[in-house]
Image (cartoon, rainbow, N blue to C red; front, top):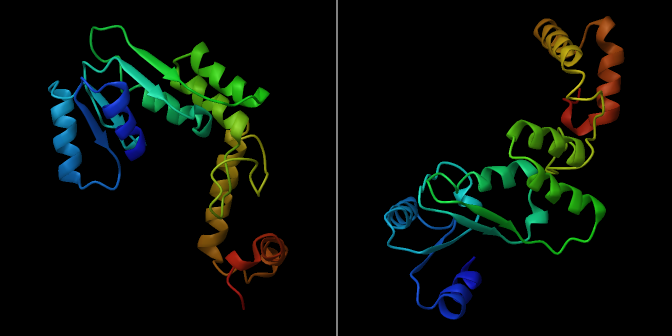
Length: 195
């Protein structure tokens, strides 16, 4: 963001007032810049995704997102929602150098619809829900147990049963829970209390 700010303020729009906003700034700095941008003191705002939620600038009408392929569809939808809140026609431009079929399909979904529920569902289908344990945020989950969109009722039932088992036998010591305990240790050994 800092290097892009330098380029935009010095080479692209030297005649305009350009502001920079990123997550390492203090809350006071961010509030001051956003207030000035909202009041029209800045013409262009270069920002990281710190602007994803909670920003309402009615006169913001153009957003350009570089490397759009790096974002989830839901996040792109949230970003896009930061513009077009006023009476002026608005445009969200997604810039990407992806040449994969999946990458293009994902970005085309943003062109096809502005329905957040449809976008979130497609994002989940395309990227997967991520891991239940660990740091991976997308892709096929380590634990597969059904389709989170189609099997919600049985998943809720399984959740209720799991909480019931844990409330009665948190350490899975009862004889009827030994098979479950062995399966959990096999799959998630380092996440299960050792004896």
